Length: 380
Image (cartoon, rainbow, N blue to C red):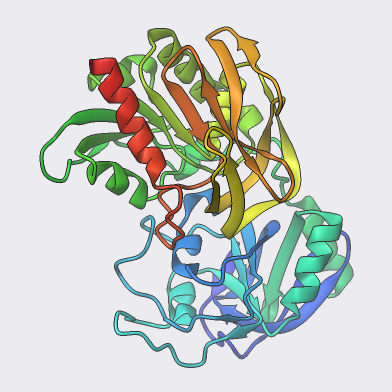
């Protein structure tokens, strides 16, 4: 990525997809060039949480909501210390932010963090194209980075693909840190950071859990050095087929029968640990309005998602694994994608979505209570 910060919002810009389709607009955020995987997010709000979600590392996010930036940017809502998206695509950026917590405009924040974007394009047409053709590599070029489309297309096709990308260690913490319990401490949890969002340990802390957040490279010995009552595997970017180390660590946790909870990437890690495969979705699930059914209760939840890969597990039968019986616990009602797994003979479960949901909805917050129940049962 190469960037400059001059002329943001004024310079011409072009977005080029790897299949050759191009969209022309104006620069939004930093001026320069960037590459990534083009994906779309269906959330009508929560753009600040989206931008700072480490799971979006190396992805260019297309916002389906036409008007973005109304509430500006504040200092309370980021999910991590930086913006992680590789690029940002909006149709109609807000000219003036208006919110009592706003400290600066979204455009200013993108410029300050060097995020190249584009505005003024038909994001509906782009989204329909990605739905039909699938997520694909893309480049955004603005200002002096613009050249003839043939040259730009060749550069896009040289960019790395998401298949085979091992990215979790690039976004995870390098040093262990502790999020203290709020109120009386009841449990200790070791959380493997594969791209964790700030609200996740906070949701656990609200339930009296002291959370030790460990690097993605943490060993099984380092996990148990904190004497955990439970182990958590977070969300994160990249292809789960490359995550051999987290899979090995999770298998060690399953061997010890310690209560285990995984979300998003953690769900895919559990799938692999149990012997299931994973595969890349055509265009993934991204947004805060995805319907999922909890098959144990029949209840339908509206949930927050950000994933481009899924677990290949049978929906309608109990599977025998090295760690006992396992079944699909949650399923997406849009396309029948596996959205959760649970073991029947050990205290372990996972979901493919984001129950912490800082931007909402909060239908799935009960899953943290389910994790607490597992730890209570193990202690008893």
